[in-house]
Each structure stands twice: as C-alpha cells, then as structure tokens.
Image (cartoon, rainbow, N blue to C red; front, side):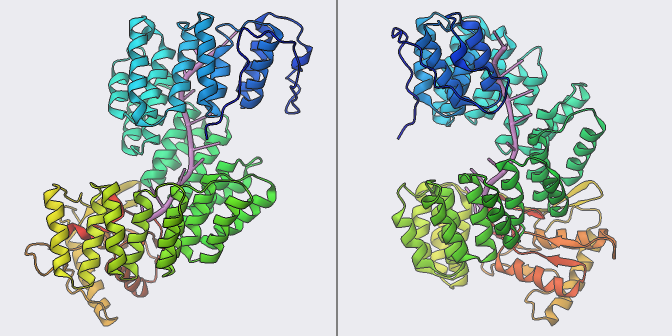
Length: 583
DNA sequence: TTAGGGTTAG
C-alpha cells in the first residue's frame, strides 16, 4: 500500500481552516494567525518545520496554505518537497511536482534540487537510475549544472542509486568543489560500504586543506567502524575534541557505532551513557554492538530498557536485537520479539528479520520450523533468508534441506560464491564426493571463483593483513615458528593439524597452507605485550576447523580471550571462512 | 530560503 498525504488541488480555493498544532517550540507561531495570502510568512513557517524534522506538520501547513488562497512560490516548494521525500511519500511528491509545473517554477534552481532530491529519495533503488539520469540531462540542457547545489544534488542522486562510478565521475568533473560536494562523495562511499575509498578521499581532502565539518566526520567514523580501524577513529575523535566543533547526535552515534564495531564496548558504553538525549539510532548502535560481540544478554536488557523509556522501536532496532538473540542462543526471546514487533508495534517483518529468525531457529537445530517460517512469509524470501537456512544446515549437517536451500539461494543470487562453497563444505563433511564435484562443475560453468579471504590485526596504529598461506610478512619466520609451537601443543589437546600445515582437501595437490586467521593470531601474539594486552578474538563465524583452533589456542595462551560470534577481528568476504581459499 | 549526515543480517 502506498502512503500519501492528499493535497488540495490548486484551483480549489476553499475557506481556510487551521488544524495546525505544535508544542515543540515557541518559534512556531500558529498558522491560524495568518490572514495573509502572501507566500512569505507561510514559507518561513514551512522552513522552520522542515528544519526541525516536523515533516508531517509541514505538509499539513502546505495544504492549509493552498486553502487560504496563498500562492506557493519557488521558496515554498523546496520545503514541501523535502518533507514529502523525508516521509517517503512519492505520490505527494508527484502532486507537488504538478503544482510546480502549473506555477511555472520548474526550472528555478532551488526547486530543481528539491525535485531531484525528492525523486531520488523516493526511488532510491538502482532500477530508477534512468530517471535520475534523465533529470541530469534535463539540467544540462537547461544550463543549470553550473549551480553547485544542483550538481551536489545530482551527485547524491547517483549515490542513492548506488551508482558509485558515475558519482565519482561527476565528482571528478566538478571544478569548484564545495565542502558539501566532498561530504556528498564521502558519505556516499560510506553508505555504499566503500570504507577504504572514504579514508582515501578524506586524506585527499586533508592534503588540499579543505576543512572538514561534522558531516565529514560522521562519514569517516562510519568507514572506520566498517574497517575496524579504531586508531583512525580515535584520531578523528581527538580532532573533534580539540576543534571548536560542537557535538551533535549524529557525531555521537557515529562514534558509539565506531567503538562498538571495533570491539571497544566499554568506550562505546561510556559515550552512550553520557548522552543527555539518546535517539533511536543511539540505542540501535549500542544494542547492535553488544549483539555482534556475543553479549546478547546485555543487548536484550538494553532493548527492554529502551522500550521502557518510551522510545518507539523501528524495524532496524529489531534486526539488531534479533541478531543479538540468535548469536547468544536466546531462541524463545527472539521469537517473542518477532511477535512483539508485529502485534505491539504494527511493524511488518521484512527479509532481514526473517533471516535473523531463520538463523535463530537454525542455530537451535529447529530446522523444520525455520523452513516452515520461510514458507509462511508474506513476501518472497530473498537470498539472505535461504542463505541463513543453508548456514544452519551446515551446523546441523542436514544435507537434504541444504540442497533445497541451495537451489533456492542460487536462483536468487547465482553469482554469490559463498553459497557454493558452503554447500561443497556440507558435502565434504558428509563424504559426498559426487556432490562436491557437482558444485565445482557448476562453479566452473558459471565462471565463478572465490575471492581470497583475509584476516587482519591492527597493531600500533597499523593494520596488518594476511591471506591464507601468506609468507610476505617480514616476521614470517617467527610467525610460523610460533604457529608450529602452538599447533604442536594443540595436538596434545586433540588437535588435528600438525606443523602449521593443514590439508584441506586431499584430492587436490598444492592447496596446502595455513589459514589467514592463524597467521593473524600468531602475529598478534608476537606483537602485543604480556600483561598489558588481552587479545580478544572475535568472529567465530568461521569454519568449524578454524573455530576449534581458536578455542584450543585460547586454552594454551592465557591472554587470548575468545568471544563467540563477533565480526571485527577477522574480516571475511562473502561471509565464508578464508580456509575455503584452498579451493 | 536550495544541495551533504548516524543504526540493520549472513
């Protein structure tokens, strides 16, 4: 069902009736006090409402403006259009566009930026890129592209359509880039998961002595969170503190998220606790942080506290709490949350929620229930949902159901190599060589190759990256020596591997090596000080073999602390363990 | 008076 706020057609000049109320701030005079039919006071009012995020009220005011007989002008539409975009009301946006055309304001730069922004916010999917590109062409034809605001807006349009190459091309061709241009590109990279590019651009900005502002730092902190680059994040925090910049909720939330994702939950919690006014995003960031670090009980506790505080949850925070439940085995609690979100808050669970719940049931071994839940889904399940079931089949060695989930998932995501690797590993554990060959053949026919996975460890401000069997690090000798020692000791605990070498698949020659995780762990042990550093190994979303290795090593090395199911120490592409690189 | 911002799994 598409939502929209019905706007009175322009020709209807009905008697003015004020419905406008606000108790938010005294800056808003009551709309009912307007007896004028000139647009200016209405515009000022609209601008204030839009500036304070009161978009619904802004649209009501716009309707009242029409009813009063005032004629909107080029300064009215930007705020009305922004409101419809922020509320994701495309039909209202289209009605406003009609008004714009009727009043001949279409080619006013202010209106044009708002129109582009409105369309690309309401059609954010890449399939609407053509619409954005035609708007771009229109602006070129009308000679409006010399206006920096218009170009910035077009840049954001490409970003929202996830068309980063086109965005960068446009960015590189903008002659007098302003801070907003830089920010649009930096935020765009951050929003599209291109964290490395964010840091590169930020560095370039520093070299060109362009002064960053809060928006820049938000994008950079988000990138640090994704990379696990706590050191850079800390430097950004210091820079903000030493500057005269005022902290705002966006910055604090970005900081909480950065520390939480980097594993520094204590710091994240301090910032969160000290926030006088926490937004829903603040709660989501801290709950998500505890969740991914395997501290689901605290995540759940915080979620319940948030509800008691009177904060209205949204779909995103439910994803975080469901994920927290699944990682810590709070199956019933998670199922209750799914029910709560539908029943109490009228939120429709989407694919992300279902993939969490399938994961939740799957980890608990309730595979049949998970399958039934997928069948009951209102919308078509996406790859992530079937992928979660496939992952659960791997844990519980259910080949039959794995084949069903795999067939579904490759139909939806035929080029996602991770799923092929997962099924092949399920076949390997079941000694089903026919199955393994079948998957390999399928991959060869489809020309699919797995990207190498890697693990990294941040040490003294530098990030060290390892791929499987890596011998490029200057400390290689010491690393392998330590690994040998660890694994020799490990075998006393019943470990399977010997001498730092591991044969993953006996059928294939020359695919022997050491997993990247092991290299990173050995490197970390060599380069951190006993007594001062505790190594926290996070992310055991790795194969059973690597999982047991980490567990065994943690028994031997007292400063190795293992946390279940966390993501920041190791970084995997396609969500698979890098040991699959021996393919 | 227009353009840029934080949170979501595997």
